Image (cartoon, rainbow over all chains, first blue to last red; front, side, top):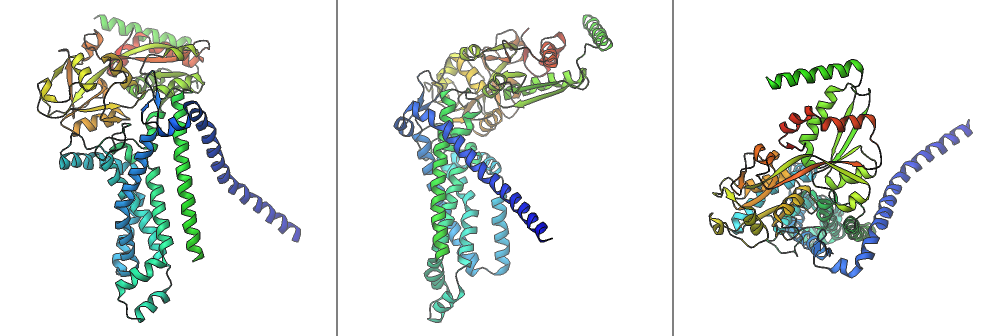
Amino acid sequence: MKNKVKTMELVVHGIFLILGLITVAAVLLISVYLIISGIPAIKEIGFFEFMFGKEWAPTVSESKFGILPFILTSVYGTAGAILLGTPIGFFTAVYLAKMASPRVKRIVSAAVSLLAGIPSVVYGLVGMLVLVPAIREFFDIPDGASLLAAIIVLSVMVLPSIIKVSLTALEAVPREYEEGSLALGATPVETYFRVSVPAAKSGIAAAIVLGVGRAIGEAMAVIMVSGNVANMPSLFESVRFLTTAVSSEMSYATAGSLHQQALFSIALVLFVFIMLINATLNFFLKRQKEE
Amino acid sequence: MKKKILSIVTATLMLACVLTGCGGKEGGTVATDGSTSMEKVIGALGEAFEGENDGVTFTYNPTGSGTGITAVAEGRCDIGLSSRALKDEEVQKGLTGTILAYDGIAVIVNPENPIADLDVETIAKIYTGEITNWSEVGGNDGEIVLIGREANSGTRDGFESITGTEDVCKYRQELTSTGDVITTVANNPNAIGYASVASVKDTVKAISVNGVAPTDETIKDGTYQIQRPFVLVTKTDAELSETAQEFYDFCFSEDAKSIIESAGVVPAN
């Protein structure tokens, strides 16, 4: 009888182990595949030429494969979105965690969750039909599809990650800290910004890094509003991101050509960026746990 | 009268086919993969083929010309669909392209734009950035916004090779689908773009080229200059499956002509 239970335990243990390994296998498979298919083009083009070349012209007879415009666009676009999205997200989180009445908190939280659930193609569509023409008319430029449009769309898209993670961190601050501050005569608002926020700073940093990850990996929404031309980034110019560089040309690139391989290399560069962001995120989350 | 005789003959032939059992094996499949521009025509052909042959399954995977050509080379589909002629390197890899039909590429502007006709040279000058304002070609004062497709797109390839502007177009936007191009041009009064004639909607205005409007007749007789081939891609040295071969033959039969025409493109043979 005891033996039977033990066998059963072992079987269940084995099944769970296999299920867990599927996830690991998927990650390994994707990483290995990306590295194997991404390295050859970088080798052939040359690392510096590839990473710092300013011109992307894959189908010309003397083709050029420089992805600096994509890298800078992704960096600027993400930075812009974080710059716009962080203050809004941060103050919303502070308000929801500390000041809002339960009813307001419930409604706003539901709205934030809904915002997170909207498919990115819908963001893109609204951006294309509303935001792009609005930018064209407001700034009186020939066409509104630009880095600015992408930044605005992305800044809305990063809000849910920033708000939700910051909110969790702020709510986890021990009540005693705040009560101590209030007892010493500080006002509630002073307490929130001098005590609660510093205590939750690792969590808030993690929220911002998560937002960075969301923004840099987004493809569908930005492809529809950014114009998608491989220019060096400029606020009112049409630009192409790392993600959209891969997705816009992959379906038409001739198989096995240097062009297709270079697209894999772009994906590899993006992958490295995301890995770095994830490492940063883990660093902040770990520090938050230790605190 | 002539048409009636033809349809009687066709009907008799079809009946004969059914009776003698040459109408295709049951349960056969035809897999096609490729150009999104060919969706309408290949869909109509596939539907008609399925209707005539019981139990045959026809599939179409709208991926893009490049992917379709790869798919047939790798044996992932029976027939690849390409909206551009095969490149030399693709022919050397053992692929054969057969032109099924011709598709006109319409040059589209916003309905508010008074321009109604341009010649090919002017269109080329506009797309290469020599002409940058609509007033230079007799329109309103406004900077021309060039809308195009991504590199390697069949439509872009077709447009650029016909107008002689390969790789020198100064696009303001490179969009990834015909629908996006039409939406963008419909939303910007100073935009100009290009799209398959068959997919042009009322939200944009297709201008005439060298005085010739893009219609079935002008594409058919070749007076409308901006047009491209729709190509069926097969392996040169491998035989198609029985069902796929029947579909292939069907595409070039007399019956298929009217189907191809009804899809808005012009049959090649």
